[in-house]
Image (spheres, rainbow, N blue to C red):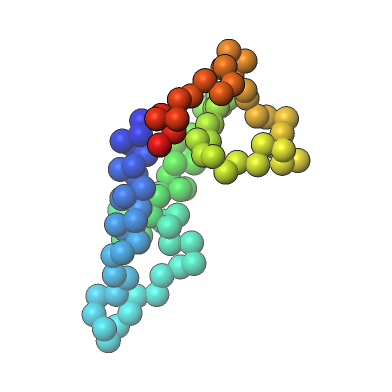
Length: 101
């Protein structure tokens, strides 16, 4: 899963580096929402958002659990505090100093 996410981010980064003009004299005007476009349809490196919506249309949705692995999350934030999960089996302070770095 990590490899898939990393590969997706690298692809997006690479696509953002592609030139949007054929030569210096005739620049191609790109839309403000170019990242939503489809390569086959619009010749712009986007995420094919409309095609994704068409693909998902009529399908039943499922609940997804998203994990944020970061040490700078404000767990007391008004909109997050009711959704923070804590491992009840975790033993506080049982990490040795060598594991911290």
